[in-house]
Length: 194
Image (cartoon, rainbow, N blue to C red; front, top):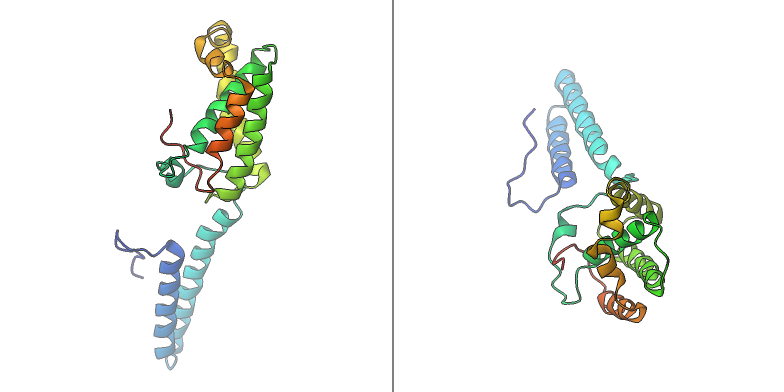
């Protein structure tokens, strides 16, 4: 059986390529129906290609984990900003603030609200089509390293300039920034990041 490949500049996805192969083999089977041995081998080949196609496609459709892909690392061209960049920063600030047991301020409530708004934006606009549960799992995994950093170097993280720098703006400033950031529906991307 020939290898299933597409030219590098081909716009076809894997499903389309597999479907083309199935159709090609099916047409060959029709032409060999008078020879039962060839017809059986052809049907078997079609079955194997179909099974292979489903094993490659079904996990992507039933995927329960959000994984960032190339689209999420593209550059925002809307001028409104990179949603995933600010979202990831606010997630880190939120996790580190909690892990350091810092006293809450109005800015922390604004960051919490900003994350919720960005979560909704990501769910509505991402080509990954994450569910709320997938997004929450991704956030837990993403902030685990921030929490580990606090455990290993509490003084450096909790009293360092980075965390306090992101907690310095007023709640109103954060709300205005996020409102502007989310004003234009588009693919949430990571770049340009600060």
